[in-house]
Length: 627
Ligand code: ADP
Image (cartoon, rainbow, N blue to C red; front, side, top):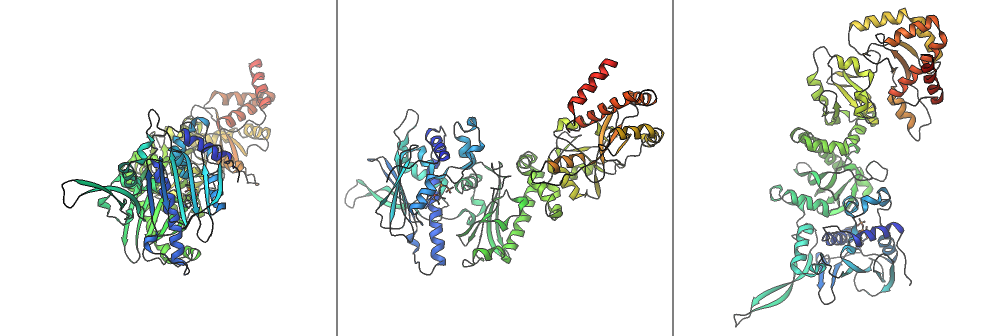
């Protein structure tokens, strides 16, 4: 059979592996052992649920063999094996297709980030080997096949002989380089070290021949001999006592499991001995996975029944708002034979899921309290998901999530919780104020914030699209309602309030005239209570704010455009106001010009596009010429 080419993306990833200056090459072994263990999990599960298959415990193992003469390292497993098709599909393409296209050339130059973000699995072999051979026989198949590749130019697959079901991977190690010694991966002590470090918790024995020595019966001489030994302790980490484990153990487990290649920000280890007994290890990742906010991302925890993996991603165990949580649950009380669909409705699972969610929330709250910096890091990565959580399902989870939210505060100049905001509210402040905008800088300059800020009230800055939607669902916090600084009634009694109403009345004709000139664009023109130094701003009456109009209309599959009821507000204490009044009396053409300019200014401040930029700039010129 002829040489086949790798898919373009696989080839790129492979090139990266081959040329990577990644410092931790040793992880290749973890990757291969992890695949071997997954393959044994699959056959183990089949044997348990299929009466026609019989296996003994001793039939499941992984074996590592180093041969210095041929410079090869062999990893053998008794797992489920691969058919010819599977060899082609699994090793010729990368499963994480699309992952590379997300990254710029620069980011992937040294491969570090790729390894960090996606993990590399099988291809990691090419970090240390220039020739890789995979011989595999699938369960239920009579034939075995050999996959072979010397790197990026392609691979071959051909029939071969193999007695037993499983997979055997042979790596021909690269020649040593000036600063890289590949031979170390043939050394017993080094292999032991790597296996202990990354794969100690693998459930199946990882066997290796090790050199031992003993005294000959009738002499003082020690003689060396070889004996097969199981290198890993095989006790799954989740069954160990918390006190025996270090942060590093959890970190290694996290990587070994490929939950992510970042560090976990926090781990939660549960051993529950109630009506349902279970162990769980949960992780909050440090970084957001690259596909987190895409449809490709799948949430879920691994589900074990007394040490046997029965489902890789049990989505029911974590709600959407905590979909970033990785980890596993192992319960003796779950039946193995229960079908996977049945599992989804299992009452016990529901109970476990409920407990887990409570724990995750508790842990996040304690992180918020005890290590704010870390919590902010977490929130930076996943806060948006919590806000979606508040908004989704008509607010069903809002009470669970409201204390986990953070927003930027105008006063503190940092992220604060709603509880912190409310605790600082002065007696006379009725509402929790917020302002929306593209960035903190922009909101800082928003004219609409002037009155509220002048009163000394704190304002929360909403810079993400979801913010205002979430808060509308939340409605209030500790009985304090949320109020946009742009809403008509700010709930602030002030002298200006009454004065502005009178001014609006007194100048009704002027405002009606302006409104007519802005036909269809504004619902009303009126005197502003909130402006201090700026001449104009836009606000909205009614349910839909200007920000919401922007967001909803920008949604790709939205075919119903909404419109905020915009109001053009004019600052009565600004000189411009007098100019308008004069123009109304003496020169309507001028007033038309001014109205257009002021309205467009207000649009610009709001971050909205000017409808007719040419007309607007021409109008500006007209003003300059006549002034
Ligand atoms: P991942 O393990 O993340 O899916 P890999 O590139 O490591 O990615 O492996 C791709 C696929 O190849 C695996 O999902 C698995 O189906 C198959 N595979 C790899 N190694 C083995 C093995 N030792 N036995 C059986 N199948 C394997």
